[in-house]
Length: 256
Image (cartoon, rainbow, N blue to C red):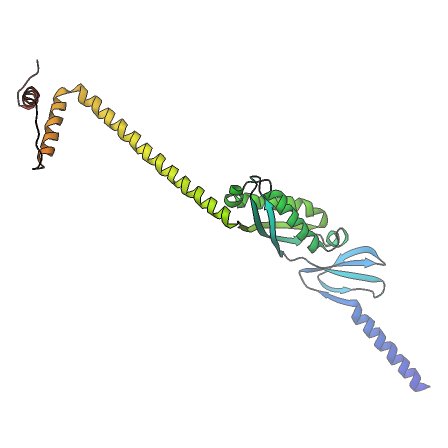
């Protein structure tokens, strides 16, 4: 009888120790415990040592660290009817553990699905050139929409980054042709602008020479000297024109 009593006491002590150990939880600094009392929300505990009454209370761990979620490539049709595949990455974290557990089932899955649909919806409103050249603005738009929709779940979307915009081969060739045409257009515009500036300079020089006939005659002589430098050249001038040129260029010559 004595041995049976000792055995019962020992068994009871083991059971008490087991229940005490099972009631203790240790939460890290980045973890919180959403505690339910008989199925009803009670409070959020942690970090540190948390006591949970077995059979009466239940605990759900929530990680508060930033989650990096890859959004798989999505088929997107841009506003100018170009089909592309776009992938992205979303950074978010739980800021309200109670809402993240109570308001939505599997908040990680829900946020991932919402990120996919939001990515397609936002990019579908923009043209291909905007997707390629204005990623920063599109990232901000997607992040703002996601953050507003996940606020009710206690989730804060901190950043969204578009990683890749994949085009088919025909579209890549079309973009290359477009870029080449744009470069040719710019080259022609620059060449035309240079011709315009040169024409204006020549016009101004002609006006200045027209105001000074002697300068025009000197310009003729300078041109004659340059042409005469080529030994294989033969220059024929009418006699009156030659006399006028020599007379206007000679020292002490006067007109009229």
